[in-house]
Length: 345
Ligand code: SF4
Image (cartoon, rainbow, N blue to C red; front, side):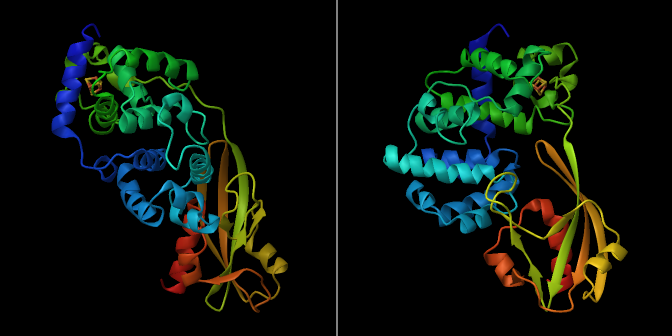
């Protein structure tokens, strides 16, 4: 792109007319921008809206978040997944209360030193809340710029991200870094979309776009295959007794740390094997298979609803307690739904 000024002008004019009204845009304090940006990682805007409002109602400030009870915090996050995000948010809030008077520090470099804040989030907070001239480059922006520049660099590589950060920096207007970064995100969400044909015919950047000119936009960005995930097979046991179900807490470190789950067995079991394992169960019903992908692990699951013959089980909770107190990660959604159906909820 030769004419940087014209590019930026076209982008901002389009943004001024087309920006969506989103709850976190109306009053972009550092706290609001941070909460929304962390929630938006790996999660769709539509899904985040309700979580965002509810979270701010319960934790309206850095100080309230720093004092949050873990179980309650995870319950607020239930369904969003990637729980490390909210664990880091609490750690970050405690640091901000201790060192920065209950707010986020005002520079990109300081933000980057906080837990859970990477280059993209630091760029977003610094530019949107503090108007610092710095890029905020996430997967959406990488896709848009790969197409604009006809770049065949692998966007999964850190080096590509760094390269694009410094290229994009050259385009950011000093008076509106907040609008510029949000405009790029908005183009990525509404026009230069992922997993579909980019909507070049309505794109304000069409005349600047090399990918469009060469007819290659759709084949970009380049993502080289990631390492295969390790597969773990599990049998999930929904052990019910008198309108209650057994839940257990996961270990306090590692995957889904401190969350609640249904008990499980490693590997797949047949109904017959489970009857041998639970001789007092009077009914065992097979549920559907399901799968959940984590960054490096894939869970393949088979579930069974086991009606226990006696109450000899620890960790029994009822429907209301599950609703109010225990965060069960979305990896178990299939089985949670089956349980609610069984309970008639
Ligand atoms: Fe994306 Fe097409 Fe716009 Fe280029 S012209 S930025 S490929 S939507």
